[in-house]
Structures are given as C-alpha cells and as structure tokens.
Image 1 (tube, rainbow, N blue to C red):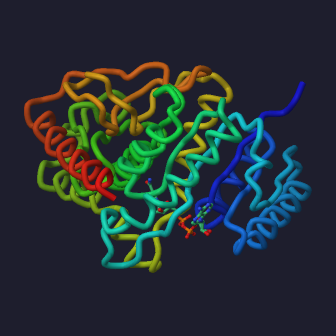
Image 2: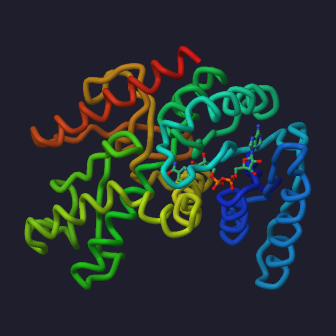
Image 3: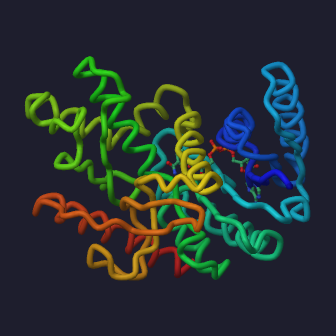
Length: 311
Ligand SMILES: NC(=O)c1ccc[n+]([C@@H]2O[C@H](COP(=O)([O-])OP(=O)(O)OC[C@H]3O[C@@H](n4cnc5c(N)ncnc54)[C@H](O)[C@@H]3O)[C@@H](O)[C@H]2O)c1
C-alpha cells in the first residue's frame, strides 16, 4: 500500500511550515515545489525537515523540486505560491501579481495531479481559489480555500484569553470572505456550548470581534510579513480531514451553487470535509445582522472576482 502524497506549491514561509506539520502528523510523503530560482530553498527545507523526522521519529519523506512532474499522483495539493502581503499592502493589492501565478500553477496541477484535492492559501484568497477552480475545471468537492479555519482559530484564541478557559472548550465560527469584511458569528460561538455573550460583556466582545477581523494586520505590523504558522495549521486540518476521512466541520472558502443565496462564488462557510473532499456545505440560520454582513462580504468578493476577470 502506497503512502499518501502531499504536494506543496510554494516553499516559502507557509510552505515550509506545511511540510513540517504534514511530516509531523505523518499525513504522507511531501513534495515541496518552488520556481527554478528557489529550487535550492525547496530542496534545503526538505532536507532540514527530513533530518527533523529522523530526530523525532516521524515516518515521512520530504523532497524539494521545481519540476511539476514530481507532484504526479498527489492526493492533496496545497498552494501558497505567490507574493506575501507587505505592511500597508491590502490583500486586494496582491490581486494582479498572484492571479498570474495561480493561473500557471493551476494549469500545472491540472496536468500533473488531476485527482488531487486542492487547498488554496494564496491571497487574495477568495479570488485565487475561484481562479483555481476555473482553470483546473475540478469539481467543487476538490477545490477549497483556507481562511475560515484560521479566522475562527484567531477568534477562539482571543476568546480563550479573555475568559481564561482552555481553547479546547472554545468553539468559534467566522464566515465570509477572507478580508476586512469577514463575519465573526456570535450566535454560533460558544464556550462548552454556553453562548459567548454570556461570558463576555458586549463592549469587550465587540473589541475582540474587531481584533479578529484585523488579526492578520496586527501580526504583519509586528513581523513585517504575513503570518505563517497558523495559516499552515489551518490547511493541515483540512488536508487531514480529507486524507483520514474524518468528516470534520470546518469553515473554509467553498464554491457556492445557491447556498446562502449565492451562486458562482467562493466564500467562507461551514463545510464537511471527508474522503470525498468538500462533501457538504452546511447551511445555518444566520441572524439578520449576520446575513447582512455576509451579503456585504459576498459583494466584496464578487467585486474582487470581477476585477480578476478583467486581468
Ligand atoms: N489564506 C490565508 O489565510 C493566508 C494567510 C497568510 C498568508 N496567505 C498568503 O499565502 C501566500 C504565501 O505566503 P508565504 O508567507 O508562504 O509567502 P512566501 O513569499 O514566503 O512564499 C511564497 C513562495 O511562493 C513561491 N512562488 C512564486 N511563484 C511561484 C510559482 N509560479 N510556482 C511555485 N511557487 C511560486 C515563491 O518563490 C515563494 O517561495 C501569500 O499570497 C499570502 O498572502 C494567506
């Protein structure tokens, strides 16, 4: 029986962390791919992680390459190819640069890993994952974007900190596009099933919601580049749910075909990821305020996709 194979397109900050996490979780063998100019980085990180596996006793091979033929037979492809956001740069500023990159990456994935589940991380996320689906022509079950898992985790972390309760008991949900219009859903955010509104006063909760929506910018300002540990972890949770057919309920960017009243759009919603990929988009009842915020977010994503279509 062959081990599963995970291809990581982009061997930068997130790519390296993805490789480390995939190996540590023994999800399968890992191929780390970057452009020819950065092949050394891909190969070097792969060697470093292989040696870590030997130290910590994880069964996984990790190889670096710039040759797409090496991703053949991959079960999962996670895409971080692109340029990261610099301080003062919005995700949307990245659109034209990263769109060209995603188009070429998608063409290669279609040719070399036609049966893989593709998880896109590159920003601006909702437009990049839309383009990935368009160029590969893969079914919606096999193309998803990572954002909601990260945004929900960010929200959870702040709530755990504010209440002094373990993050293990915090269940937070953030929907919508991956940007300033994301929608932290208070009505579905609980601590051990107890609504978060019973734990934290409104003004403090409002401040946490705002901090969550600006969570990425807070870190960019501190480290001068985008975040990478938590984004990698978000994609690994999705990949693991697929590879181990866990059927976990995870917020991620999914292609909608009428759910929540939207069509032909990628936006963050709760989905079940199992052995078939994105098996189900779960429709939950939103409060009037939350639906209005989701509409605003969907509109922002639509504008982004329309701008991408002109490039
Ligand atoms: N979805 C999210 O929640 C989220 C969170 C953080 C960052 N991001 C995004 O993830 C992306 C990657 O971030 P990072 O920190 O790893 O950046 P990084 O610059 O460290 O790595 C990106 C890598 O992609 C490579 N690359 C560029 N063009 C390529 C191509 N055609 N084929 C293969 N590789 C190519 C680069 O050489 C580089 O090594 C950025 O677009 C960033 O904005 C998304």
